[in-house]
Amino acid sequence: MVIECKEKCDVLVIGAGIAGISAAIQAAKCGSSVVLTSSTAIFSGSSFFPGTWGLGLIGPEDEKDEADLEESIARVGCGMTKPEIVKTFVHNINPSIYDLESRGVKLRTAEKQDEKEFIPCFDHKRRNWNGLEAESMRAVFKKELLEYKVKLCPYYEALELIKNDKRVCGAVFGHKDAILAIRSKAVILATGGYGGLFKNYLTTSDIMGMGHAIALRAGASLINMEFMQMMPGFISPSPKTVFNEKTFRFSSFSDDKGNNIFKNIQDYTELLEQRSTHGPFTSACMDREIDFIIAKEELKGGVYVRYSDEMKNNPPEFIKTYFEWLKDKKGLTFNDTVSVGIFAHAANGGIKIESDASTEVSGLYACGEVTGGMHGADRIGGLSSANGLVFGRIAGNSAAIDSNTETISDEKIILKAHYVFDYSSKLAMLRKIMTENAMISRNEIGLNKAINFCKQTLEEINRSTENLSDKAKVIEYYRLSANLFTAMAVLKPAILRKESRGSHYREDYPEIIKSEDKRICIFEKDGKIKAMYER
Image (cartoon, helix red, strand yellow):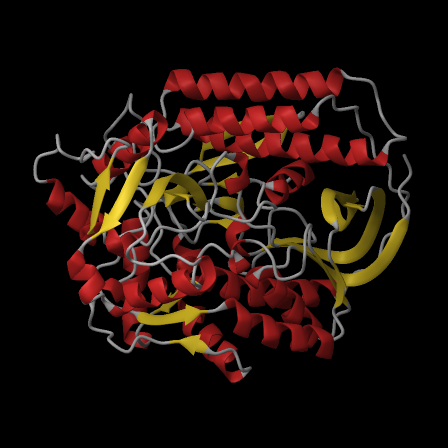
């Protein structure tokens, strides 16, 4: 199938959350013609997820605090971060925050900064804490996208990157059952994580790991993909709402018969106190037992949360803010009982980049949650949004400079596809298998089961009849093959890493092992996903 080119630009940005929008605006400020695409609406992804009050955003307290924050990121990351990336990251956080404020984005600040609830997840001290709210970001970003003449292409789903002479020079998209191409001099991927590969996920439905897959097929590699944040969320009422971890110490948890689900854990109140210090699950703390029991009881008959009178009568500021939002947006209060479970949330790993946001492939840049190296096995709270801001600006600047020396390719674009039978049921089965075998508790048998499913399904769809006429089915083929590719990119390092480290827990290897203190890279070779330790 020959694909028609609908648009040409200097810099093509794929993904329209904080990272992608920041990249697009920065590239346009540099004088580049920019197209910004999104598989759903502009202002999408985890950056604008409606299941939480907003996003925490932290930076060092001042320049003197930068070294401590770098060390803390490495410590919390259990040695899995890239030091040069972390240094660039930390040094640019506060300038990015000040830049955001100067442009008119209103940041929420803490009135009672000394309350321990403002210590970021997994951190040991208070930082420069800010709250990002979607409405303020949307208003400022919308104005700037218009001012700098960024062309917006919502509902353009990236299917494949275009390469010419080993350089990425555009992408093929599915759009309203049509297939078209946008040619460019440079491409920035800002497609977010892969939480949507699981049944329960605290992201928007478009976060399916598409960017990881198309980057792999273009020749880029991934890093730290076995490390993913998983955390409690509401099952009912108001499904896919983030459970505020700061309330753990004020909460009681019961099964469907009203029994305390933690009654068999000695000193469980101390574990709940510790669990209140971080949102995501980690194998690094003894409070991991809390998450294991919630996950187990969720499958039996549900886990029900009630809040203490102490919290209702005198809530800390952070919790008060959360419940004000919860009442306003979800109609829920302190007095409502909620059912909770464990959800897939944010990715700690992703596309391997350098400090200038470049990948191993000429012409291809990446930023935001789709990337890896600045976080490790666990991530300090408030640094995901910081990552999007910092490396979004860097990627936009780097791609704009790169595009100055390039011309737009006019080589013919050929696309091949196969017919996918029953796409919806295959995706549902993938999510079920990933949930059963790659969530907070993993083992070799389960991981092999999931890997075999992905292999067999990929082989099945690639053996099927070649399909070029039904555009909707072509889109389904690329979507499903990408989902399976990215799932394999999570499973392969998870089975290779025979230890428990941070968010990666192996019940058959429950301890951290010093000899495993190295990162795992993932790459594609001859259509297959490979994983190996960095040399």
